[in-house]
Image 1 (tube, rainbow over the protein chains, first blue to last red):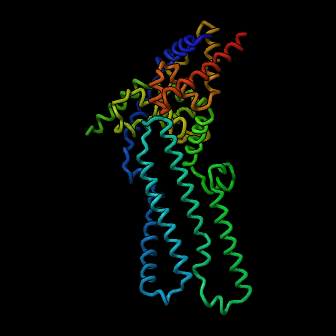
Image 2: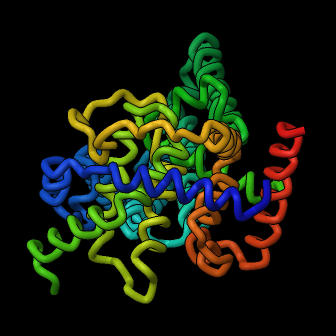
Length: 216
Length: 169
C-alpha cells in the first residue's frame, strides 16, 4: 500500500463520517452560557480561600514579628522569633509563587501550539512541586518555636528526650520530602497521597508527551 | 469589543463547520464512546473559553486542531466518571453503512488500529498528515520545527508501510 492510498482511504471514510455528524444544539447552547472567566473567577473557592489565609497569615504574623524584633528583641523568646520568622518567610515565598502560578494558569491559551502548552503545563507543575518541597521545610520549625531557656535550665531528661525525638523526626521527614518530592516518584503511594487531585493528571500526560518528543 | 451574542453565534458556526476536526481527534485519542463525549465536551468548552483570544493570523482549522489536541493530550482522564454530559455533544446521525469493498474496510480497520497503537505525539502527526496538512501547517499546530516534522513523519510512514507489507505478504 502506498502513501496516497492511506490518504484516499482515510478521506473516503472521513467524508462519510463527517456527513453523518450532528452537533447537539442544546449542549452547545449550554456551553455558551459558561462565563468567560477573568483571573479571579477562574480560581476555585478553595484556592481563593487558601490564598487569603496565606496572605492574612503572612501579613499579621509578619508584622507582629517585625514589631517584636524592633521593639522587644531583648525580652522576646528568640526560639519563637526565629522559628516563626523563618516560617513566615517560607509561607510568603509560597504565597507569591502560588499567585504567580494562578496567573499563569489563567493566561494559558489552548490555542497555542501543542508542544508549547505541554511545556508550560510541565513547568507550572514542577514549580508546584518545588513550592511544596519548600513548605515541608517548615515542619521542624513547628517543633522549635515554643522552646525557651527554662526548658534547658529546669527541664528533665524525659522532656529533652521527647523533644529531641520530635524535632529530629520532623527534620528527617522535612529533608526526606525535600529531596524525594520529584516527578520521578509520581507513582509512589506517598506521592499520590500528597498530590492527589484532578490537576495532576494533565501534568503526567504532558510529561509523557514531552518524553516522547525527547525519545527520538 | 465583540458582543456575547456575536461570540456565541461565531462559536456555533465554528463548531458546526468544523465538528469533524473535534470528532476525529476525540476518536483517535479516546476509543471508548461514552468517555469520548466527555472529551468532546471539554474540547468545546475550551473552544468557547479561548474564542476571544483567537488570532485570525492562523486558519481556524489550525486553531481548532491546537485546542482539540491540547485537550485530548492533557486534559482528559480515561478513568473519569461521566458526570456532566447527559446527552452526546457531537454524534453520528446513523451508523455508517458497511462499505461493499471488504478489502478497503479491512485496510481502514488496519490503518485505524495502527493509529491507535501510536504514542500521543505520533498520533497527532498522523492525523494531521492524513488530513492533508503540509509540514509547515503541522509545525504551526504542534510547535515542532518543519524539519523535525519531516523526520518524524518519514519514520512513521516507514513503520506504516512495513506493517502493511508484513500483513499483505
